[in-house]
Length: 133
Length: 133
DNA sequence: ACGTGTGTACTATGTGTGGTAGTACACACC
DNA sequence: GGTGTGTACTACCACACATAGTACACACGT
Image (cartoon, rainbow over all chains, first blue to last red; front, side):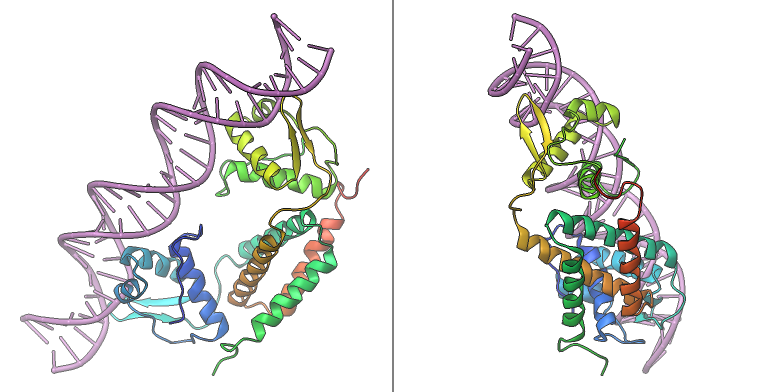
């Protein structure tokens, strides 16, 4: 299964579902048009409450990551206009700024940050689940 | 004042205090040995509860960002061994990975991410509060 | 027309975190 | 001994997260 949930982590479970599915899509494990498990099925598989999964699906639909067809199921959406794009890029900038502050307090130089970023990108492009089939 | 608190934001207030102080130090607005306002004073200034500020100070002390002297006050610590350094760098990596996923869903290329990072670093080094006095 | 599979909506309940309020204590310094 | 400091409590409220259970609305195959 492409999803792994850790109820212990501070990150809310529904958010882990959202992030997990987005990661699977970004990695190409899930592709445009692929059908996702039903709310009830995924809940059973992950031993979660259907409401929790439904909340995750709602969020993903709002971000236009998936498409929901009542009575038929939910599917990975085709890339299209993304809502709130500017706001979300702004939030990415804030996150990066936070990274710089944290780096400073870890006594890292900006070069160290670049290097770490490079490493993360490499690991991202390398692993088995890499590109689409 | 170097601190700005927005109780509306989803980020907990005490965390905003923590981050705000760490940012001020990283920017050089606060320097090694500088005295911070007392728990009660800062609470009054920011219209917060003393307990909330105390919680922030506790967290900052745990990270060795500040030093606390009972009865005397709290001061910006001198750079030294940082606790949990590896764990925190791991967390930075996770954050960067999340950034890459988010970027993908915003239809950004890796070059776009690099460029944004560059821009954030520039803005970080530029502004008025820049280097130490 | 009906049954099944789907997402959705609602109420209720329990738990944990965040925040405030108030009080009391412990220590350092003048 | 008084003042300024951080600390430790207890109590209370608000909110988000999660679960549980029930019911509804829509699509599709038969």
